[in-house]
Image 1 (tube, rainbow, N blue to C red):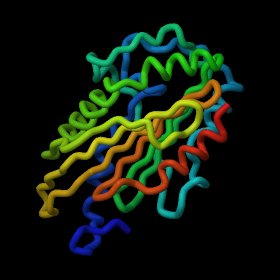
Image 2 (image 1 turned 180 degrees about the vertical axis):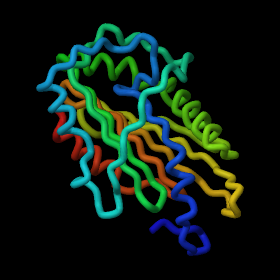
Image 3 (image 1 turned 180 degrees about the horizontal axis):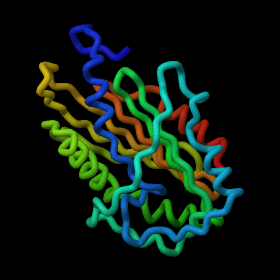
Length: 224
């Protein structure tokens, strides 16, 4: 169980943390208006589903939850033109932990390696970090939380698959239910392997979620 600095259980934070998630759409392009065209086929849909994080990949305490629907453009300042790259399969899984953490895996299979690599190069930009910050601020506002972003960064580590990039946003949450203010860590790890991409999102209070790179490598091994 996650604990506060005073060593007391923080079960009261679980509903708060679960209210924060707004899932970025497939393939790093956060609600871009020049999205990839989709020509989905059953074989690649199956491959995408196999590559996502499954409950068997996780320790006890994680529960599968319905994935959030996509909800229109939220980042007009980050709009890469991805219309030349075709997606042929996609899948998504979402999990929540009773201690307040959340995890999402989003996998897209492209028609060929060239499309997957080109799409990743066009999308893995600092603009995605700005978009992630905006999405989180919208989430806090929708959850009626007072919060501020205290730091954010983009990194090329950990190295996973043929291409990878990671983003971390640290926010300070100021609850109104008597809980002291605390840090919320939002980590996005994007990778490309073969003709597939995956975006893994990890949200956890107090400390970053452990085992992110190991989970990403498990996903990469299953990506076509």
